[in-house]
Amino acid sequence: MFKNILVAPNSHKECADSVEISKIICDYLAEKSSFKIISKPLSDGGDGFLNVCKSVFYTKPLLITIDNDFDETEKEYTILFDHESKNIFIESAELFGLKLIEETKRNPLLLNSSVLGKIITILIQNVNQKKLDIQTVWIGVGGTATIDLGIGACSQLGLSLLDRYGNALKAIPKYFNEVSSVKFNNPNLPFKIKCVVDVETELIGEPGAIEIYGKQKGASSNDLKIIKGGIKNILGLISKDLKFSIPEKLNGAGGGLATGLNIFLNAEIIPAEKFIMEYLLRNINLDKIDVVISGEGSFDSQSFEGKGSGVLLDLFKHKSIPIFLINGSTCLPENIKLPKNITVINTIDFFNSKEESIKNFQSGIVKATEIVINHLTN
Image 1 (cartoon, one colour):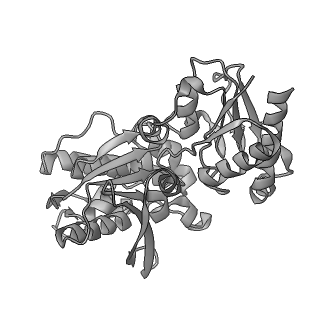
Image 2 (cartoon, one colour):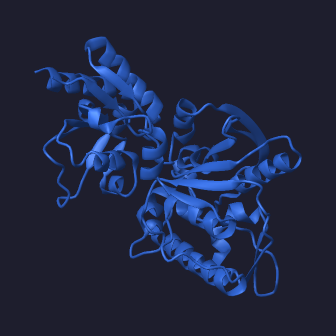
Image 3 (cartoon, rainbow, N blue to C red):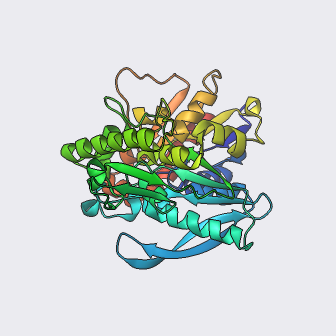
């Protein structure tokens, strides 16, 4: 007899974050069944990171107004502050995420992560002026429209890019190949930075994260060659001019954002698996879970590269309990076979098109949950 159901979905991009998806599933389960439901929405650092942190930690919103480089206007950004633990939580996807930029305007050659650097600068000022007491700044890294190695953010924190004539260059990938030297005035952070990353894919490979995720960010094949060459140029100059050691493996999350913050600001890179296990599921005895419901918007081979649902499957891989993946869609290569105890339900199958399934995602999640109940009760 099934007793304890763990509902732990990841976000469904373009539809809803994991907190909303979990609520839809849990509400329907509670209405139609008598199972004990444990709701633990997942976040791997990507879209929905802030909402998950809000549901897990004792946070309050902190509003920060800064200049927006994208359209030269002032914009108000929301981050979270946990007064008890003195932790700040920031979601990169809320600052320069794909979801914020129209598909026709996506161009990683011209976009960077400078907004994050401005926010960190304001936090430093608040700590130095004793307005805030901050121990750690947690950054959810994923879902970004950028591929800039975090250079944009670091350009607000003491990093300068210079051409061969000593002129300063704008910190966007379009100019990375023109950089002849780099300078860095360390800001001496009064707090630690920890980056929760949504992928483990290496930034530079054949292919690496630049190629794997670059096209969905609006980059052409030629753009990706320029960006990749420029990032390699910057990395070489960091080693030559600053004598900084470059990690052997460069994490590709957020277009290299976590890697850049690690190199320049000594940020710690936290894999999604560690964040999920040690923080999101810390009070759950996994041995007492009888059924798992997870899933995400698009479940594919990349889901096993550190994404939330892939992490959860790995946690339960030695157990033969029923696992249900409620996905928007699923596209796995032939060499990846899911175990027989895993049932995949795609909400797109309930509709005539992807657009219709996105528009009516609530009813799609309900229909999928009904299938789960039928499986467990028959």
